[in-house]
Image: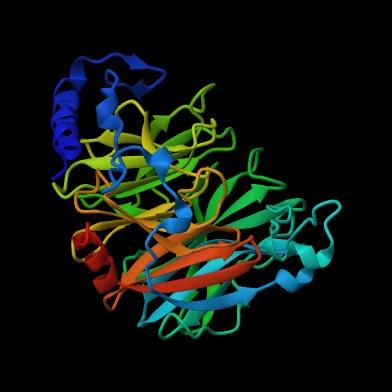
Length: 401
C-alpha cells in the first residue's frame, strides 16, 4: 500500500469520527481541509506524484479489440453521437447513446468535421440502442426513446439500470440546447421482451440529469449522482420501494473556484467508505474528490487532487479481481488520448496506460464480462465505439510497476 493511501485512510477515519461536531453550511457537511499530501491520487513509478511531467505520447500501450457501433462522421457535422453507455443483460451486450442533430462549426468544411466536435445537445435529439452477443459485432442501431415530448426539447442518454430483473434505459428530457433550464426530468424506458421493444416506464426523478445509472450501496439502497437545471450537484438515495422513490442529499455547490460537474462514486475495499470523484469546470484541470462513510448521506469537503483531467467525463470500475480501473481523458490539454489508470486500493492510481488516441475521444463507460472490460466511448461526438481489454493484460501492467 502506498504511503499516501495509508495516510489518507487514517485521515478519512479521523474526519468522520468527529463529523457530528462539524458545522453545517448551506446544507453541506464539511470537514477541515485535507493536508496537501492527502490530495494525491496519482503516484507513478518514474515521476511519482508530479503528474505535470507525464508524456502522454510515451505511455505504455494496452492491447485491445476495437469495434465501431455507429458512425455519422460523413454527415459533415450535421449529426451527433455522444453519451455512450453499455450493460450486460439477458446474455448479450446492450449499448445506448444520444443520437441527434449537430451544428457544424462555422468556417469548417464538411470533410474536416470528422475529428471536430459539432455543436450538440440540440432540440430533437433522441436515444438509440444496439445489441451484441460478443461486444464486437453489433446490430443495426434502433430508436429507443422516440421523439422528444415537447417542442424545443431533446433526450440525453443516461445509462441502463437493471432493477428487480428488469432492464430500464434512463434518459433525461431536457430544454435544449444544453440542459440548464426548467422542464428537466429523468425518465425511464422498460424493455418489453414479449413486444421486443422499449416502453415508457415513467419519471424516475424530476429536475435531474444523472451522470451514470444507480448503483447499490452496501446497505442495499440505490445511490445515483445528479445535477439539477441550476447545475447544483447532489446524490439521490432510495429506489428500493419503487423506481421513483428517492431522497436528495447535497454533495457539492457550483462555486466561484471549484465548479463540480459530472460526479461519480464508488466503494473502497472496506465496503463502507464511498469515494466521490468529480470533474472540475473551474479550470483546475484536475479531478476533485470527497468521501462519505454514512452511505452517501454526508460528504467531506471537496479537494482538488493531482490526477490530471481534460475537463471531461470519466468512469471508475472495481473489477472482479479487486483492482480498480479509471478510464478518462487524463491529458489536461485536450481530449486525446483516452487512458486507463489502475489502482489496487481505489485511492492511489499507480499505473497509467494509453488506450486509444491521435483524435478527439471522450465520455467513456465500462462494464466487465468474461474476463474482459468493455469500454464504450465516442469519437469527436460522431461515433459510438467500443474497446475490449483483457483483465490479464491490465493485471500484468499493474504487476509490472
